[in-house]
Image (cartoon, rainbow, N blue to C red):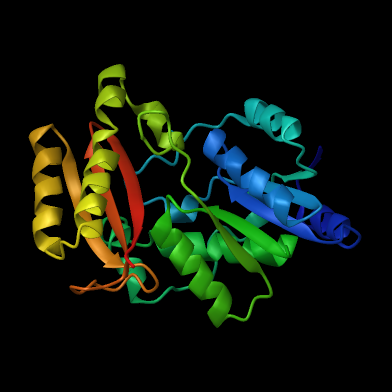
Length: 278
């Protein structure tokens, strides 16, 4: 695996690489990231992964400084997974003027769901992903469905800005007890880790109600919220939304997504389940 640290060298490599699939990450890699790499291998002969902890998507008081940097371990995992190039720029390389005058501003959906609790987060995501797309110029880019709102925003951004990149969503990787794989799971204490699958189990219970014909979204959301709060969670939201647009879902929708974010101790966890009804 080749490690490339500069934009100039990345562009030079890209000129002769042929079809490329790209997986942008912030490092601290786990099996969920490696599932993205596996999908990337199915999409193209050459695979590029980036590691960059993007300051722009961290809000005030969030864990930018404490976010785990595990470069050596990440390199070993990516090399073992057959990645062709690791693009590993530092902040000065990617943001030479520190603060940019131009950023990518998503529409109103950036201020809903997770965006309501993390102001500016999706602006930071959209900006850095656009920069990485402009540098790597992939044919395909793979993103996990766990960050469903992020995936929606990136797909819409690519469509609206006419970027010639196919966006491939990859199913959420889960531990055996249902917990969605996430770099932030490492922040959980042993007791919190044992409790953490409750988030997914509540979403799965809503899915069952939906598949059985229930359309009382407010009741489902409230039941899940109450169960989580009764077990010590601080709930940001539990919501049923239209899967294609992320707008508020109405009774009788055939394709919805149930999304949730909640804090367990100091750790904020997110998850979702996709529900299609015939």
